[in-house]
Amino acid sequence: MNKASDQPKVGAPKEEKPEPQSLLNGPPQVINIGLASFADELTKQGKVVVHVDWSPPARGDLELANLLSKLSE
Image (cartoon, rainbow, N blue to C red; front, side):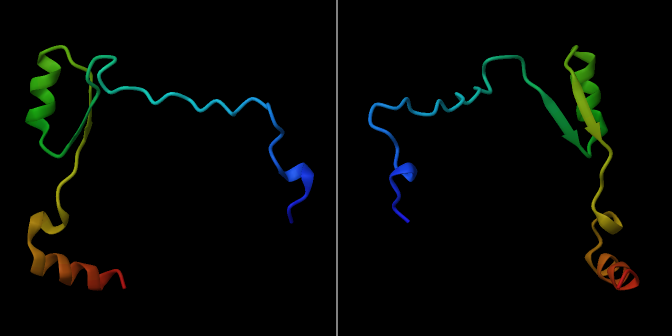
């Protein structure tokens, strides 16, 4: 499997890899999950926030969550 066409050519330019973007190059970008009041406070300050309305299954009650998971089996 070592054909000459598989080998890089001498003097051939190397592939340019895109430079990673720094998180510090621009303003913060916020995705808020769960606590709406946190997103509200940032919005009041003029920040752009994407809010995801989420809460733990069964409101965090592990026993109830286990019972509910059996319903979907």
